[in-house]
Image (cartoon, rainbow, N blue to C red; front, top):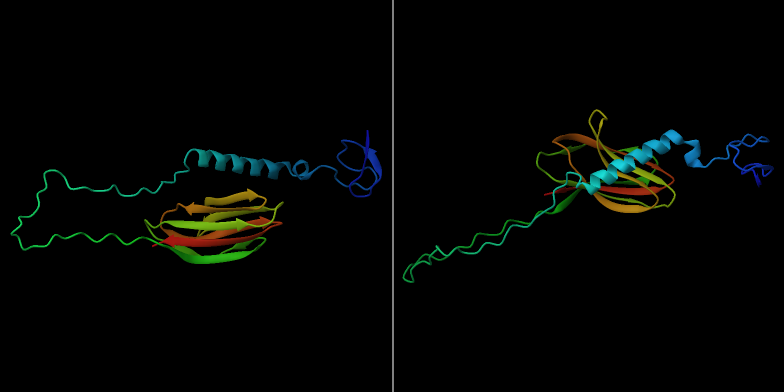
Amino acid sequence: MMVNCKACGKEIAKGVKKCPHCGKDQRNFFGRHKILTGIVALIVIIIIVSVSSGGGKSKATSAPATTPSATQSSPPASSSTPASTPAPAPEKKWTQIGSWSGSGIKNTEDFTISDGAQYRLNWEAQDNGGVFQIYVEDSKGAPVDVAANVQNAAKDVSYVHASAGTYHLSINSANTKWSVTLEEQK
């Protein structure tokens, strides 16, 4: 069976790797880049396993409601001390630390993670057909967390789990526009 070359349009046998006329590789992206395809597949498998096993993320729980116990007694009616109700703890809010957008590759400026604080990344990859990745790296450039690794348009929130220290984001993209916001819960 014969097909036309993707580059020169001349007739070639179906299944050939390169056109005998112009030398253009006829394989698709995955066929031409087997090592990259294997690495991306491995990362996707790791993410799927991490997400399905809980990924080490703890779910937020609300404090149980408290009710007076049967052994507590009310103050005597003749008592002049008013009953006091403890004030509720202030609600923690997410505060923006940094925001970046663009296309292509970017290393953000450094930011500091405090011990015991919670951080999250709101991110979006806007164009279908592109690749988008966010790595959290320490001050020496060593990766400590993968916050995003997607193909095509996507939007999500990723939580950063790292010990106290100085970090930056390494953002890699191809054929997509992106935006990322880093927030700390205060």
